[in-house]
Image (cartoon, rainbow, N blue to C red; front, side, top):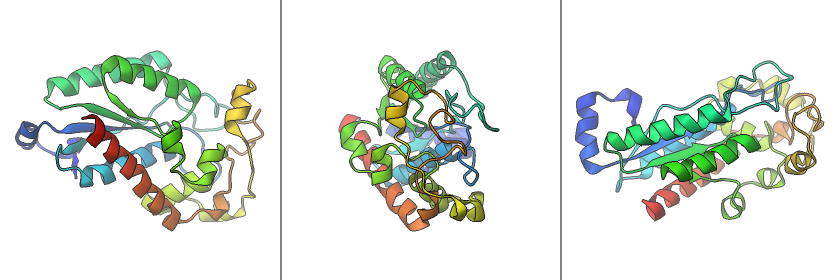
Length: 239
């Protein structure tokens, strides 16, 4: 598995003769309950890209440095919501797509795990404009392969996301806080459709929903394998 930031220029020169794809992890810096790190979404994207890159040989894949900032406003009532605008996000996608093409990469593949509606809409449109691939986990066929909590839309810092963090960075989870949290069912898509645009208005007064106390590293590792499966399949089908 190759990370772009870790190789030398001559090493990349040798690799790009095989015209690798560029896997780009995206996320956000925002509150994930009292137990999970602000960088949860980015961590999940990085873990997915690195697992997929380890499997891809033809074409090979290179993991770009992650973009840790996204369009994030729903968590503004809590400490840690640091975001960028839709315009900046679009510009970054278009610029990076041009740059990686100029560097001899076969295709840019965007992997995002921050699902604020404005983030998703911007990435879908920018990916199409840039002729990049976008692993769209909210599309039906992908969402159906993920755990039930994700499919219900009650998974912000819940069992689904917390399990993924436990799989790759267990030291970043406050286990005492995690195990003390009661399950909180919030239909986030329905709340958003009803016009609620912040966590507090959705009933998430501690910036989480779902069941984080039920999270486990075993579930996280299994979910990462599914996410990597989908990314590998996208590359092999579309590149």
